[in-house]
Image 1 (cartoon, rainbow, N blue to C red):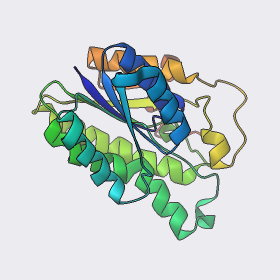
Image 2: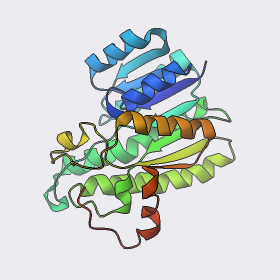
Image 3: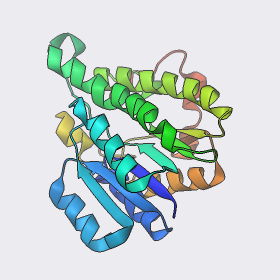
Image 4: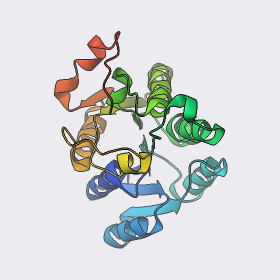
Length: 237
């Protein structure tokens, strides 16, 4: 049975990814903080799904995930770094914890998780890093989030080159704004237009895994953004 580890599995894109992969025969280990949501998934998906309650801000989170994989899964076919959060605040108004937590969750923990689980991944395995289309714009309302995701974007391109010789595929995912609680939690108004449904993004990710793509931009018609991003657009999203 193929296995997948998904961070941010208790809501949004991660929740939908969990359901899709379980229906396609995967055994999924979901990582999240919402115990009730993860319990609900376990009740529905039964033996196809296991979960760990983890706060990625805490340093011990990586060891906790790796220890579970070592004891119960022994191998990982797909790792999806999906968890993330933002803060709607000017950079000069961020306190020390704001800056640290944003980069821990959006950049540092994903890279640490790759390193921790790499020994369980064989040739043909896949790593998915969910980034954001906002890296191709000037996201003035979520500046630290954009900066952290740009760092993950850069690191993902390097990982792609480093892991190619091992036969491990790295997929970079760039979704536009998604109908989740992200904006509410970040403390800003939810965009009223051009919002993606989480299941649409999840299906695109699963398709990319199956076709071993290296990059996915959602919606596809915004694929033009990387080509015009030398002069970042003043888009406040």
